[in-house]
Length: 368
Ligand code: G6P
Image (cartoon, rainbow, N blue to C red):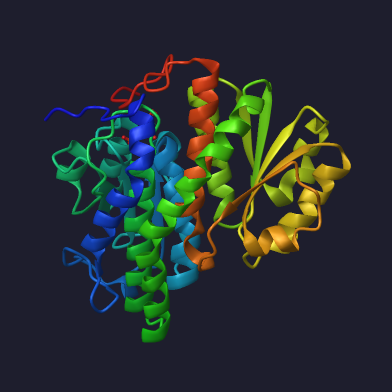
């Protein structure tokens, strides 16, 4: 199989732009588009009603997909979820309950730490389910159930389309869990699934922010540090935004839960510090706005990623406002991932780094 860059300068740019399509393919595998109900492509070998706790394990970007999924599983299915990075999970000898569910997320399906964590969970008698992009991989082969992402080959070392496809699979699985556990009515399910069906179109609309982000990247490229803030599912996305920026542009970045700002990172804020605030107009929007006020009062440069409603309600002059489409609050990370990825990409292009092959990084880490 030969994969080329089509008309793009880098694989990463191509992969960012492919997302509406590949996330759409993934959606069609997990949702019955005619009835707008969840439909897992395989029969799950357990009943979600019997699961007392879910453990999610992964590395890097995949671990942030898992962290976002925790919010979905807990909200839709009322099941407690623990998320771990695989290198910690495998040595911690965490107490696990036989018959519970362990989920592993991996683009390559070959990450050594994730594989070792899978083997540990199996040895403890857990059901093992993996969300993988390479169906022939070791993690896929050794898992009891495989839920594939249909991202297609991902060449850029920094993961983009695999991440949003992982989110799509996990969102559908969380809705299926909520349904099986009797926590979601048919109406709730319909509303959530409709929200998922809308995602590819909204992602395409989010790509429209690119010219504005390209301009913004010229400023970010001059900075030393960037802070990313978010609450709820926007918090793990803030972590992902910071990871993306540092891995390809080599600019130091940190992601933080917006509410933790005052417990440390606020000390860093001055007029040289750009702060990317990921804040769709959701239940925690007002709280995030008050954190923004704390930044603004100290001269920080705010880059606000929100929707039209959020932009109208935010009472602070933000340096730059990036407007994303209006949408149901539950699935915003899949849409907001786009400007976050584009910002890292265009900043790296301005910096002149090797975007697809950043220094010191490997696409698949098969050693400890
Ligand atoms: C490497 C890649 C990351 C990826 C991580 C996990 O560090 O550079 O982009 O998120 O591995 O890889 P996996 O294949 O398990 O998703």
